[in-house]
Every structure is written in structure tokens, then in C-alpha cells.
Image 1 (cartoon, rainbow, N blue to C red):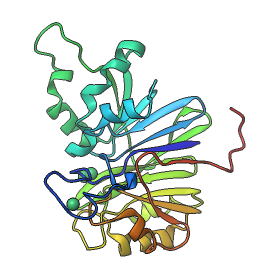
Image 2: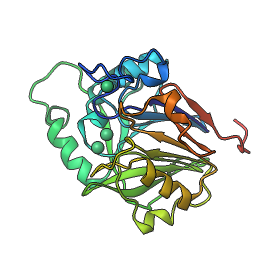
Image 3: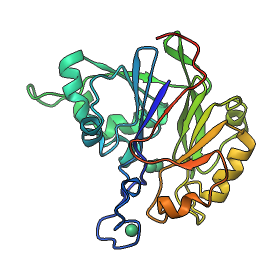
Image 4: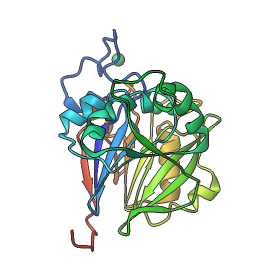
Length: 261
Ligand SMILES: [Zn+2]
Ligand SMILES: [Zn+2]
Ligand SMILES: [Zn+2]
């Protein structure tokens, strides 16, 4: 299993437009954060989580050649506005499975009405095969890649986190319900929302994220959806062993992999 962080920034991205703070003016590449998204590669499958507003730039930067499926966490602009840019992949490989929960599908069909109710002939449209995911209902794209959608709460909005074998990706959340905690045992790696140090009504902040990590006990944890309050080098010292701030371009692999690829 290989997980690539395509973006680790909060909804504005970092640097933030017109901001002169220490992080936004930092030369450290780890302080430059595109909008959150990850790529999972395993068992011959290549799975994108969220078509962020920076998807085109991310696909070019990391040399994306193919996708087998796209999973959506929720329909906020930073997570979905790159959907139109899957078209070059459609031109090569045809329609792409798009997985989202029922609530997100309502918004996807409204925001991208032109995809589902084309008003004219001509012009390339994204081609998607819609799938609705249910919390706890595991599906597989390959027998060696099990995907379990997990319900988490983002303010008041139910959004999807995803477990991929023993990796889990949970961004944009303020609360993890008990029934989801029960599905997060035995994790090798957990990627968790952590906006900043100060409390926030719809995201985890550092103390709260560490509390969840303490309960979930993954072998290692990575924090994402990071605002400009966090300066990577300075603030890495504030994290306990086994927890890191993720950064764009970071790759993590499953060292306990047993299947042969
Ligand atoms: Zn977000
Ligand atoms: Zn700033
Ligand atoms: Zn959000």
C-alpha cells in the first residue's frame, strides 16, 4: 500500500492569498500546502480521495497516469471543485467510478448539473459512474484492497472517512461517532484532520486530534488539512512520538505488506 499526500492544506491553501505571516512567507516546501487530497495505490488500483480545487496541478506535479476510482469525503468546494479535470483521464480510459454518500450526491448533482443534465451537444464532459457509499459497508476494487466508508461529523454535516485495509483517511471532522471508533482498530497508519492549535467548530485542533489518536492507537498518525497557524519545522517539536504533520508530496507505505505485487 502506498499513500501519497497530494495536498495537506486547509480550504484556502497555504500560503493564503494576501497573507504575510511566517508560514505564508516561509521558504520551507513543507509549508506550501495545496488543498487536501490523497492518492492510494495498491493491488494494481489507483484511488483518488477528493477532486480538490488543486487537482489538475496535483495530477501534473505527481505524474498521475491513471485512476481506477474517485472517492469523495464531502461536497465542500475545496474537496470537489477539481472534478471537471478528470476529463483527460476519461478521454484515455473512459468513465470513472465516483463514490460518495447520499448527502454528497445531492450536492454533486446540483453543483455539476451540466455533467448529469447536459444542455447542449459537444464539448467534453466528465464521465462518471455514480456509486453511493454507506457507513460500514465495505467494498473492494480488488480482493486485496478493502475499502470501508466511515461516518464522521464535520460540524453538523455527516461526511465520509475511508479505511483502506489498515490505512485510514479522516479529514474534515469535529467528531468521530462511537460506531466509527469501533471500525478503526488495528490501524497501521491514520491520517487525521488537524486544522490548527486553537479550537474550531467544524475541524479538529491539535489537543482534540491527539485525544482521538490516543484512543484509536494507530501505529503512526499524520495530521492534515493544516492552516497557516502551523509552521512545519517549528511545530513538529510539539507532537508526540509517532505523530507527524503531513506535507504535500509525503509518501507512506505499508511496511507490513504480505501480498506480492
Ligand atoms: Zn476541507
Ligand atoms: Zn499566513
Ligand atoms: Zn469541509
